[in-house]
Image (tube, rainbow, N blue to C red; front, side, top):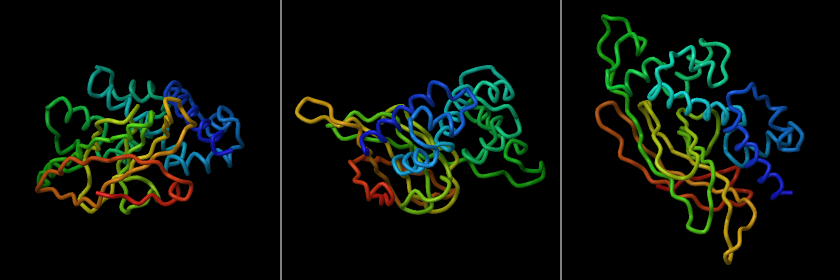
Length: 244
């Protein structure tokens, strides 16, 4: 049963990447997985450390970031392209996940700088501190074939509650978490890997890793972090301590 559900989660994540522009519901995802809504949601969260809805939202925002940086589409067009019917909802959720508005993100990544309006300030307010990005790299064990990787910034060493910042990678590698708030944080990563044994592939296996604590402040940049993924047993899926 464990192998069946992990394979189902891998299949659903791949489906999310192909169909994130559609109005995907939990029922749709559960149907793709071939499990009940409750069982699918519970097992998906255990394996990835985040709910299916938040995982889908992170995928959508990665595409939104790419379009804001590389295309001439306006915010309303980008909102529609990634599956949001309301520009207001898209903008609010984008700011909650990244710390800045879509327009501010575009200005920042086009090297134009941020205006007071972009940062939600009044014109007479003192300048806001420069956004603090966290750069890092996720490394997978040599014996596995890790796929999609969720990376989230959490207050503690366990993936509890909503991540302060998050991103989804198509495979282990470099990542950036934009505009990290001031405070002490832990960076957690989860994936589902195809582990090889004796030249043959075994079933999908959850892999986890983390780094922390890190302290973010407005007066100094964050050092890059390296997260090394390792195989997790069933108990570790619920409690994912980090090392760093």
